[in-house]
Amino acid sequence: MISQPSRYCTVELQALPSRIGQVRRIVSAQLRYWHLDPLIDQAALGVTELLTNVHRHAQPDKVCTVEIELLLDRLTVSVHDHDPRLPEVRDAEPFETCGRGLAMVAAVSESWGVRPRGDSGKVVWFTLPAPTSAVAMPSTYPAYGVTASDPFADLDAGPLTDGHAPGHAPARSAVVG
Image 1 (cartoon, rainbow, N blue to C red):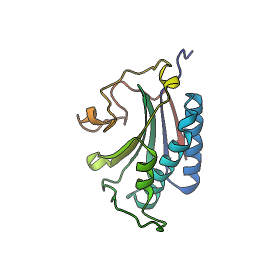
Image 2: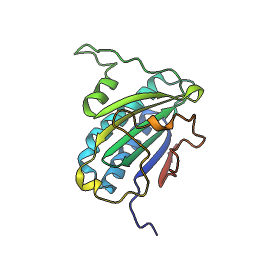
Image 3: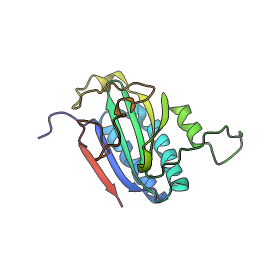
Image 4: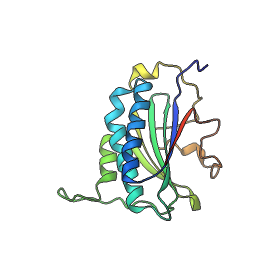
């Protein structure tokens, strides 16, 4: 029996247009389950933009992992793909229809960034402040020095073999295929 709600969720998928909508619904449902309803629109928009970037730009494949995690007062949403190339961040003109994804992520999030993972690809992440009512709920995972500026700062020990932070096992996971 699970005595406390999970605070970590991971979804592996091929970043195809039909799958992106499914993952958006999974993220929304998980945030509802965690009583983080005020964050659903921002998280869904951010994850959609990051997955669209994987679909459009990632090589050699479109396989990626979406992770959402609530630590302390911060929700972190991250997408890991296998392409080691870092995204180009540029200023888009007001009426451009492409190249605005990361600007939108920056606009709706508290912080965001990119973390290279060597030959295994990269992680693009963003954070959202969690409402105090959700923070009051007990967490099943300890904090590992996560900051708003870079939630992966303490993970510089090299690539993780299972793709999870130390001491973290996915409480809920799904493979969308």
